[in-house]
Length: 409
Ligand SMILES: CC(C)(COP(=O)(O)OP(=O)(O)OC[C@H]1O[C@@H](n2cnc3c(N)ncnc32)[C@H](O)[C@@H]1OP(=O)(O)O)[C@@H](O)C(=O)NCCC(=O)NCCS
Image 1 (cartoon, protein in one colour):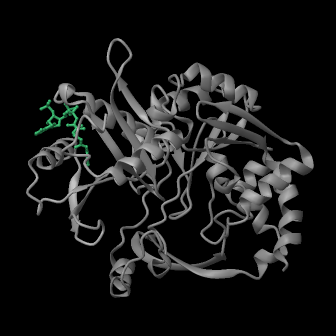
Image 2: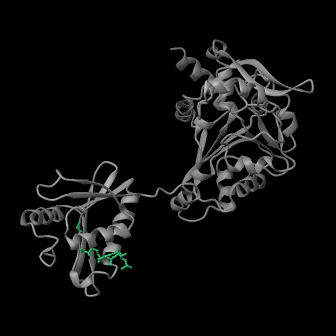
């Protein structure tokens, strides 16, 4: 094949290198309808990039889409293999060769952009590096790519039951829809599945945190300039259970909170939403200085032995474990001032209060230790993720001892 393209492959030593490369590396071949090879592409993998090390199509097959097909196969395989950037080295435009001018047009037509011409990379010729980013699927496109078949409401119902949820259950639910894959009907399907399992007797609770309603000097995602802090403290609107947006809580909670029978607790930064016969009494009161501790909605959920349901997320996202944290000796030594904007006596005020410096960094380890020691969690596969179910009382009781032991150091 290289011999058939002498004006591109005229350096015998280079051709020998190509031949020995394809003998030892996986290579894409294009064949005609009799199975004869009419084109080849040999890729070379670097750290986060993949290179078209060699591409050649027999001259009589040029401009029939063979090169395009080879590059498409190379690109799809590279993307699936985590490659971020594609590259090719070809003869640079400062060289007058017309054949290579056509080759560069081919690469440009396929989306490769000239990056830089080097004059010292190859002994006698200018080398042009051309690059193309791999488009990483995000959001819904990524969910579709990860999902074999749509995840239906019926599948969610079956998985919730297998995870221990029952008619009449009181449950605190944490969710990441995208980690399950593509759920048909999105947040609505999950909320309806929860209701189908727990029935009208059940009460569902979800965290609905609003992290912007907090002391701006401690914001991290993103931080804001120090010069803005005073303005934020003066101007942040007062928390309004109906209006205040949640921060990155996901589509399931977003859908759930908009149901007319869903109520939201009055804590400006760390509220919960609930729906069901126990909703109001579980969420009220919610004292400023005890977001997740004594007298909080979590403490009342514990008293009712609520079920924890982790949909696509792990114990690292399980707010309930803050209740265990609040009951350790560690907590009493780690109280810090917080700030928020809320209504006080009919007026908007910036209010400063003390609470524990909550820390979820070791919750994944806590969850793993709980599962290993007690076997008290159910893990049920669902789509590209899983549902984890466990008793809140059991994991909080276990967590108090575990945190007391591990956080002392
Ligand atoms: C470069 C090469 C691999 C392209 O393969 P090909 O099968 O001819 O390319 P395709 O038919 O798939 O072309 C895809 C698109 O690239 C562009 N293209 C291809 N050849 C082109 C040319 N000569 N001039 C301008 N555009 C060109 C066109 O947009 C074309 O789409 P279109 O035909 O629908 O308009 C082939 O010509 C070849 O083997 N060349 C010699 C070897 C070589 O240059 N190797 C690379 C060394 S770095």
